[in-house]
Length: 396
Ligand SMILES: Cc1ncc(COP(=O)(O)O)c(C=O)c1O
Image (cartoon, rainbow, N blue to C red; front, side, top):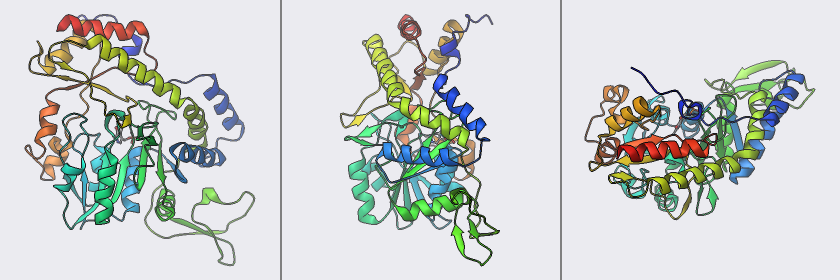
């Protein structure tokens, strides 16, 4: 098959954008011997936590690792249920399933595609331990009623903010809206740390300490007289010798490196600019695509600052092509790569094997027949945005 020539920003759809500032930061880390979890990680954690408006940040290797630590902090186990959304990357549900908990999928709001207090209420039982939300595509869930519901029942709430760095709900930042926030700095995200990376945020000291410990193998450090020094070797005061290690529990190595953190600090300073560009591109798409029969642009709630990690349109039955044909034609005739974020998790082979089945979340299943994500990231030029929009209009 003859495809049109690739267009760089449309073929390589991830948003990573580095400049001389990141390069300079990396040179400094190299000169310092590029340590594992060193002083730059601490600085990055403090800066990120302060950006979100919480006292504690904990840098990790990925959001997948962070979600797992969040479940461990909540002491989720085989007797527990975790309520989550079917529309997410599979890491979200896996965090609960990998602790042996039962994953309970609540259905989503048809406009925002997010969980709501109503949909969650229908799934709460005596065994519900955690509500695990996702601020899908960069738009925060309607948090006030959800937090009220959770507080009344003493249920811990974790916000998966993988799409939502810099997003806001009623003027408060994602990462400060629940008990624990989990961020991703994977190469496709709104800010990035050399391909992979993540951050946990919390206001609760007890949860922070538990996650800190499990991030680093639950390692305790003692001096020769058996005096306890630190739960995390990376947090030992400089120059202090430690002599033997003990372990409190069965933990992990989910530590971020200083090289990633040095880049993360630079990226954090650029995040609002990156998000402003994403919002601008989303507005341009909305203008260009307005009036096309059977194509619905994303709904944005008045309570949020949506940071458009993903720009998702709905291909309705009135559109000239089916969703699949629309996606195929965009690629084969225009070389525009689009995606469908995501296959509902309960319909994946892995979760069908765990007993989940079609019919569990009818709204999400119906939306899956329609949603398509158009390319969006700060590297896109005006020409490429117009090219995508014009190509879609041609197909309508
Ligand atoms: C909603 C959501 N949660 C979690 C993750 C996992 O992030 P990571 O790739 O950093 O493990 C992703 C990744 O795309 C995601 O989209």
